[in-house]
Amino acid sequence: MAEEASLFSEVIGLQQQKYDDGVVFPAVLFPNPNASKPVQLTDAIKANKPWLDSLLHRSGAILFRGFPVSTASDFNDVVNSSGYEDFPYGAGVLATRTKVCDRVYTANEAPPDQMIGFHHETSHASEFPSKLFFFCEIEPGRGGETCIVLSHVIYEKMKGKHPEFVEQLEEKGLTYSRVIGEKFDPSSPVGRGWKAAFMTDDKSVAEERATKLGMKLEWIGDDVKVIIGPKPSFRYNEARQKKTWFNRLAVSYGGLKDKLNDDPTKAVVYGDGEPLPPDAVNDLLKMLDEECVALQWCKGDLLLLDNLAVLHSRRPLLAPPRRILASFCK
Image 1 (cartoon, rainbow, N blue to C red):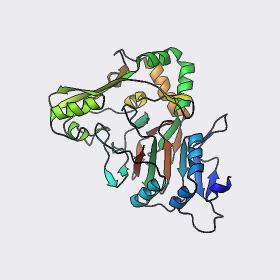
Image 2 (tube, helix red, strand yellow):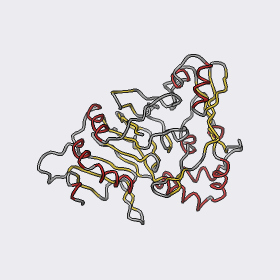
Image 3 (tube, helix red, strand yellow):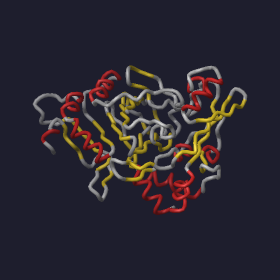
Image 4 (cartoon, rainbow, N blue to C red):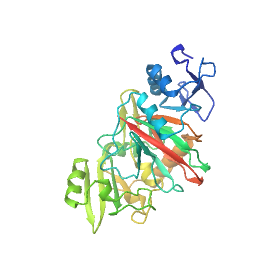
């Protein structure tokens, strides 16, 4: 491998997809066993930043494994060493996360036995992070894999299989809606209540903040329907010159039911309000599952994702424990 990356040892053949253009997804880096002293990940990142940026651009994801990273504070140091600017976790985000320290949050705190479908982080918002870090503090007993897939691959395959559906998505976009309660619901995969989501207990203030975020609120007693869209279904990735499947369609169908939301066909529709064709949606869900890499977490693993290029999901945890932490970058 390149001399400038001598602190790393790149591994091929471990939980990876290989594509015709030579891309290996994700890239997997271990400490170089021939290094003169134990390799600290923070030092290795600082010393090899241009090479790592190039590798992330080429692959879309990098898994760092075998480095001495064991705590949330260690993880925070690694994130800081990357030089990427912090993307704050703020108003309008419905997923439940707890701040652990500085730039580190828990990953989505949806009930661990529930699936979280494929998505780009906050793709529905006007601003979204460009990069994501995940860290395995406690490895899963069984299940709980984080699955990743290259978004442009899904776009190209869906366009080949369902060209009319893709054309309609291109023309109309998508509208999302979800009913959320006043308070936190621990049984829901999207557990944040509207007071926490909009950081206020005043409905008029919540409406103002929602409007600024491109959302519309419809009150149902103390609950509220949050409507987002129409939003574009795809995004052109300038860096890669490829069109990506940049939407929340799969996550809306991929297991976000709760007592206030039990019909995914109402949760996401075309931008004009018309329902989506079930056969195309089912093929999309199958395709994502077939094309993805399901990462089996090991304690100390760090995963760096290009959020503009890669969709991610979480499979149900079959045997606890599991604790994954996250950090978001501009």
